[in-house]
Image 1 (cartoon, helix red, strand yellow):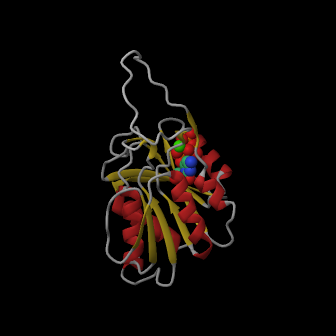
Image 2 (cartoon, protein in one colour; image 1 turned 135 degrees about the vertical axis):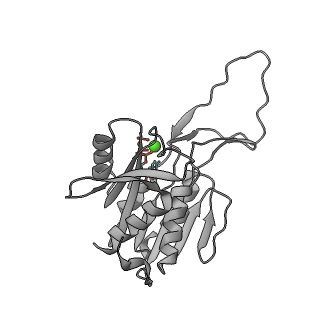
Image 3 (cartoon, helix red, strand yellow; image 1 turned 135 degrees about the horizontal axis):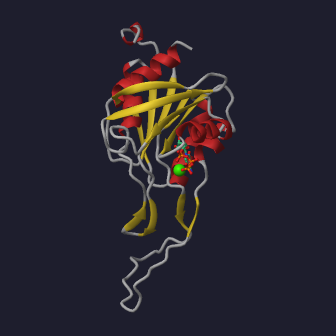
Length: 220
Ligand code: CTP
Ligand code: CA
């Protein structure tokens, strides 16, 4: 990793990072979500901040970092709304959030009670908007990075995402691989970039992944 980290090489750049799993309400006390600690996104945001970027972190996790604008959201729809307000004004978007693919069709105003006569409870789900695809479609000069969480056929699935989501880069990771899944402090990334061969990175800490990514960005 080159000397980019000595200087504030991202000074003057606006960076948005999304992180954490969205929480889609079923009723006032329950939600549908998925396994995501937000750690990969936090590392991306912190390293960018340390390199001098003006960082906005949009997250579902109750967390605070110095020298960062933090916007708290719960649902995919809220995340998309916040992004739409600031995306045009940014230089880089990192979509590290684990967006729930589906949300309940109906959100109950009141806590749903157990029905003692029924052992089965159905929750009808509808698709959430694809935030990355929708936002990146409005891209002018922004550099847009998505993640691809896969459990099989990593390269072919990630390549499809690179093509379909209007992203400049997809950082693909096999979430069923040891040391690269949810909640852990390490990750093993394959970087896919339009017009380039995929590059497989070693297993490393999420902070080192973030450093390696920003180094890649700064050397573009
Ligand atoms: N993403 C998004 N909006 C969604 C779903 C995903 O913006 N509704 C983003 C994620 O933040 C990530 C990328 O799209 O950067 C890929 O997410 P992933 O879950 O791997 O892909 P999906 O397109 O949802 O496909 P699938 O879950 O079926 O593999
Ligand atoms: Ca998904």
